[in-house]
Length: 376
Image (cartoon, rainbow, N blue to C red; front, top):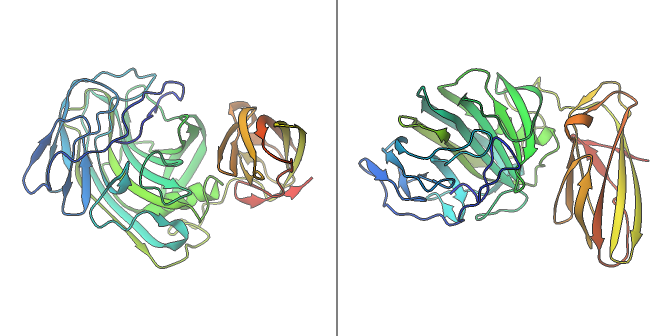
C-alpha cells in the first residue's frame, strides 16, 4: 500500500490503513485481475503493480497487463474535502517492504547520475480523481514504512480536489509550467506540482523535480530516493482510468549538478541573504525557542523553508507560526499561509516548545531555502 495515512485534499482528514504490502499474484505474463485490498503482482520482471485500496472497504479491481493496468471496478466513494479511496499504481523501488525485482533503490541523491521515466495515462470523464506520479525520499535508505518527503506530480485532476497544504507559487520544471503546493499530511511532508492542463504522456528526468525540491531546502544530497510510482487517486468513480505504459531507470555513479538538468534557468527561491536570531529559554526537562528570520537580500522571498539541527537531547513537542517537523536532530520549519512573504529587510518569527534531556545548547547553523544564513 502507499502508506498508513493519505490525505490529499485536507491535511486534517487522515485515514488509517494497514502497513503491510502483500503479493497475491505471481508475475504477470497475461492479463491478471486483482481485487484484493493490497494485492500486487510484478510485470516485466521489473515493476510492481498494486491495487492499494487503502481508504475504503468497497470493492476495487484492476486489470494488469504486461505494460500497465486499468481500473475495471471502483465502488468506493470518498469525500472530496478529504482523502481519496485508493492509490492503484505501478512502481519501481521499495514500498512498505515490497521491493520491485532487482531494484537498486534506495539510492543516495548524491550518487544518482541519471533518473529518467516515461509514462502514458488513459483518462476518463465523469470521475473525480487525480493522475498522481509520486517520488519518495527519506534521510535513510528506508525500505519500509512512511518516507519523510513525497514529491507529487499531478498530471491531471478532475473535480473539486486539491493537493495537501497551500499553493506557494509557480515553477518551471522539466521545461513545463506547474503550480507548486507545499504542506504536510501529519505523517510526511509533501511538495506537489500540478499541471495547468492534462498531460497524457511524457518522458522526463525525475532529477528535475528532486533538484527543485532540494533547492527549496526540503531535502539535501544525503537523502535517499526510495521509489518512483505512477497511478491514480480516485475519490468517486474511475473505471477506465489506466496506466498504458510506465518505465523508470535510476543510474548511480555520479555527483548531481548544482542546477537541474535541462532546466538551468530555474532559480532557487528566496533572496541572496538571510540572518537568523535564535532566542531560547530552558529549564530542567524542557525549553522554548523563538526564531526570527530576516531577509538581508535584495529580493523578496516568496515561501520559505528553514533547516537546521538541534543538539542532542532536544525534542520539539508543539510549535506556532510555522509548520515544524523533526527527524532525529534535523529540523525543518516552513511558513504558514500568512507569513510566507519576506520583503528585503523584513523579518518573520516562529517558535516552539520541547523536552530536554541533559544540558541545553542552541543550534549553530541555519539554511533558508538552501542558502546559509548568518547567525544574529
